[in-house]
Length: 446
Image (cartoon, rainbow, N blue to C red; front, side, top):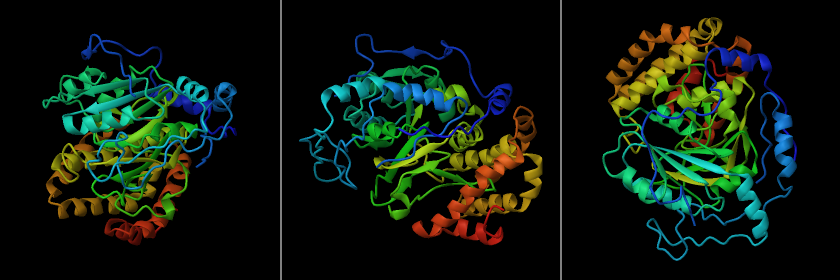
């Protein structure tokens, strides 16, 4: 299997160490309460792509890994019926007819057992209420052909019985005691995982039975699949993230049909953390999520740090999941808009060097103001303003403890993303925001 090119460098790693991004040593224990069911096991559940590229020593590490992993091209382990949610064989699907999963006999039990042992997966589920949704997610995890070795549910102070459900289903529950936000909950889970792979899943997703098996088969540093909208499975909800010069991002394909532009595997620099799988090693190299973001755009911030160190991921179109979307608050809830507007400014503070803040002043201003008009159209203009004021108020303090990327490096990351963002618009029906943004900023990131 071909090993990816080495893209990182020791100087970049050292720079990120100095600015406090990377944790070292064994995970820190203690803190919020750590609860296990007393007598239950942790969990006992019943296309080709490019090899992932990586940072320093990626080739040697990957060589050691693939030296004992079987060299084989796996046959599809299940026939995925597009637009239907997985249900256990013989059960009646709640959204349509029963889906019967026929597992391929081409993979022998011995090889499958080897694959399970090599690809030990830890699952992190940040939780804040949503008992019914969590139940559906746990059902889909129980059907995985590459079963997770452990499930960690990090509870942000749920009040509807969701945490109790997780305990009953055999998950390990870590109680934060209050709503600490998505980033803090995921970081707590990362500090506790034991698997070679770490999956981060929203409570409002369900996975096709071969989701993990297809993602691990690509061997990238991180991977995500084709995530469809739960209420309309013919429409995309998430694929990968693209960032513009304005520090506004687009979840590629959102709301559009699953067309040819999204049917091929491709290398990506940032994955939405809706249903994503990482090599656990990447968190030692890159660090955890930036806790100051709380929720929203923390995945884009992580993607920028990963790209700066040369770690790329893979979009795997054949891996399928379904997402309810904004199940906690709603997409245009004032709190969602406030945090998103604030975190757009945080991206500028943490990653944009002064030279590019000046050079890209007009695209930044145009993109930020246009996003404010979209928020105003959805009745959240005041929340947008509050978010921008908070972001600007904290800009200097956040910048003082960050190390913006070198200008050329940031341009090399964002230029191709913005070009691809523009090229993909016709595939989903260009929305007004991006049409006006590219009109006002003379299209490309030059």
